[in-house]
Image (cartoon, rainbow, N blue to C red; front, side):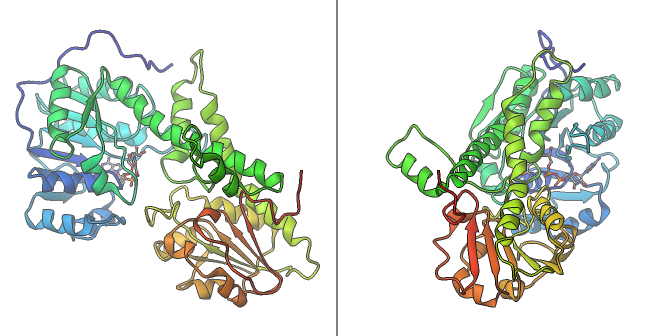
Length: 461
Ligand SMILES: NC(=O)c1ccc[n+]([C@@H]2O[C@H](COP(=O)([O-])OP(=O)(O)OC[C@H]3O[C@@H](n4cnc5c(N)ncnc54)[C@H](O)[C@@H]3O)[C@@H](O)[C@H]2O)c1
């Protein structure tokens, strides 16, 4: 059973405090790469370690593998100034006094936290750990992982070191700006660990929030993300209820909040991405075997994970009204990244995958296509979609069009005009209706339905 309680008085670790100017970051993904270049820009020398050779080579050549505003210029500068040194393992005699862990912490098929990446990276650090080094965990962890998994591995070195948990809370697509703006939570093994981590992150943000234990910092990260997931689930559940009653949830939410500050409800829409899709499971896993387990997060996750099926079933039911609806339809999906705003090309845990999967169970498609200018052909194909270069190519002769993210190029498409390209009878189903004004007059026999809006479904109370 995992101990998630902080052990009583915390002992100071590590040698004499020093100015930490050489930093080693392990894992140059969506979190590690922006952090690395931002620290390099603040004047530190950053040793970026990325185990994936192709990724490391790309980064070392000055090309980020992720889409983040300002990142390409900052990476180029950092490389030119030799403040950002990229390798596939910790360089020999690495002068870093701080090791920051930013590897992924995905869940496995049983929805349990995968700990192998964290364990591996901590073993790598242990091999080179020097007395007085500071280790910072920044990946999102199952509660108690710092104390129960990382510290025992590092303790075996016999070295004196500091350790802190400083969660990353940036939003993908606005990482650099948020690194400079967001408050940084810092929880450490000792006052000195907290002081060193505080000093380090003060180079980026003026707002440091120190907390009393590593576990407090760990749970804050999970609570932040899970609360967001719950908010979306509340909205999506009300959306579904409104739809069932033949009402328009957009109208309901807008009117409910009009001048009335006590109701705060986000818009309906698909909820995906690498963080929200897993953090509830990290929390659940943390409480495995304990007397208490979280309830609301589980229900919220189920609601958000249920949206793809709900949309697919709605589309299927609607098309059955038409005896002439194609029995080998063409599907066009607009949006493949897990979100459209801020824009990203990240398809990890994108709900587009489950949407296509559910539709495939209901329709015998002749073709499944996708349009999302942010997403590579390879990633589009892994979602089971042929990548189209233009939205017109995607809609041409399509029978079913599904809008799965709110990327502005997609939200601003003149659907009315474009519906003339479609095969009839046709259906456009929109998971992100709030970002567009009504699609305008559609081609005859093309129908527009949107999630959370029952006004076209013919249902009434
Ligand atoms: N993506 C986000 O917006 C975000 C925001 C806040 C927190 N987080 C959390 O931060 C962590 C990292 O997320 P991410 O999105 O950057 O993941 P990612 O998959 O984009 O990046 C992790 C990188 O670590 C590399 N890696 C794995 N093992 C390694 C090792 N032993 N040595 C060196 N490199 C190694 C991987 O190849 C990968 O490139 C996760 O725990 C995530 O939950 C992510």
